[in-house]
Every structure is written in structure tokens, then in C-alpha cells.
Image 1 (cartoon, rainbow, N blue to C red):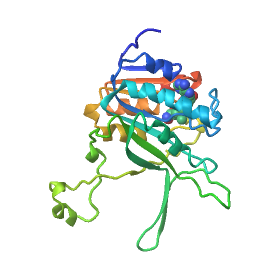
Image 2: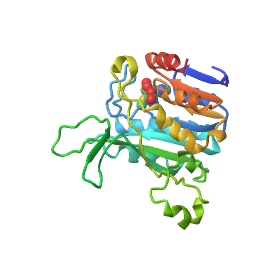
Image 3: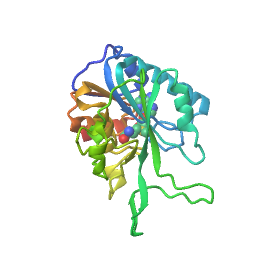
Image 4: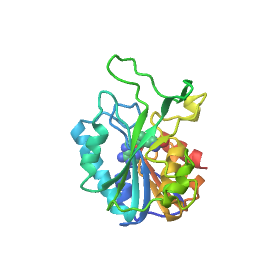
Length: 268
Ligand SMILES: C[S@@+](CC[C@H](N)C(=O)[O-])C[C@H]1O[C@@H](n2cnc3c(N)ncnc32)[C@H](O)[C@@H]1O
């Protein structure tokens, strides 16, 4: 195959390492992606049970291509989860990639949370898969590693800003500039939408919500994204997020034809 055709929303069925190799150096502003985690997830085609070493070798290969095509002030938001039986996997991945990228921020994607109000009322929000165990806790979060070429990529922190709880801080801290908006921080509560039919509404075993990808786009700065990429497109949630944020160009690769077809359908 020749040089990549950079039309507006270019989704391609195929291997992402091959696909990225056809993109020019420093041609992408933003990568938002979630690779297979090697946790034995039952994808329709891809086998998610490689030996640990070869999985990390392969991760390094796709990351080399991602680094090559990412601009010097670009961002790679890498979503990765773990399992109680495999708690170190996200950290091993980051240790592997640290010769290529700087870990600029670590974000916790909170899928479910329980809080106690001051009056003692218990509040629970979000969804999680319960774990029946005497040793392990229910797993209610995943990581979003914000990897950048130099560790100096500017962010639009207030694009995800939240109002101050204590309004007296607006006047007390000069950096607020009088505005009632502060940086949200690195814990993002993004629940999965409640669905009636998994097969019809979420026909993929390991997706992230559209809103999660939207957060990444907004944090990087929508106006600084001309070209966005997701090498592991799945059913296209990052592409839908790009479309909803008005990103002009998007490239996505997916090796599994069933998921690829669904991604194209959702984007249309
Ligand atoms: C964790 S899922 C991504 C899900 C996606 N974020 C979504 O919300 O739909 C990882 C995807 O990578 C795909 N995949 C695995 N190896 C690939 C490769 N070499 N090139 C492109 N896609 C690949 C799998 O088929 C799977 O759909």
C-alpha cells in the first residue's frame, strides 16, 4: 500500500503498525487509544493471550510508530486497565514506553464510585463488574496515561474545568483571574451508559465511553487538533468523539472486520 490518503475521516480495516508506517513523520496532533490489554478478553478475532514478553515487545513496536508520527507538542492518551491477577500490567507497559515518551500526566478513569454525604446518605454511581473474592476489591477504575514527546505539551485545563466548591478561593488565589472555574484534576468519573442490549448497543467486549475520548480531545485543546488518530479503533468511540468535537481529520485502524464495520456504521 502507498502513502496514506488523508481524507476527512479515514477508517481502515487492517493492522495499525502497517497503517501508521504509511503516515508521515510528525503528521498527527493527538492520539487517543486503548490497545488490547492482554488480559484474555474474548475479542471476535484478536487473541488477547500472548506471553507477557512478546506482548510488551509488540506494544513497543506500535508505540515506536506512534511516536514517529506524533508532532512535538502532541499528546498520546493511552487507556489501559488491569486485572486483580495482573495488577502490574499498566505499569510495565509505561516502563517499556518511557524511552519513547514522557509520562506527562496520569489520569484515573473512575467507572463507579460510592460517596457518603455529610448527612450520612450513601450515594453510588456508575457500573462495574463485581468480583467475587476474599482477596480482591471490585475493580472500578482504569488508567489514562498522558504521554508526550517532551513532557511540555500545553493543555487546555479549563476546557474540563469545574466550579470552585468554596467560592472564597476565587478571590484568594490570583491564578483564578476572578473566574469560577478550576482544573478538574486527574480523576475523571465517566460511567458507561446504561444499555438494554449489549449485542446491539455495545457489540465489543472492551470499549471506552465516547465522553472519555471527548475529555482527552478537550484537554489537549480542540483548536490544536487538526489530525487525530486511534490505532485500535474498536467500534469507533474515539471517531464519534472526534466528530462531535469538530475535529477536522481523523484516522482509525481496526484489525477485526466485524468491529470495523460497526465503527463505520456508527460514524455514519
Ligand atoms: C480495547 S479495544 C479498543 C476499543 C475502542 N476503544 C472502543 O471504544 O471501541 C482494542 C481493539 O484493537 C484491535 N486490534 C488488535 N490488534 C490490532 C492491530 N494490530 N491493529 C489494529 N487493531 C487491532 C482489537 O480487535 C480491538 O477491537
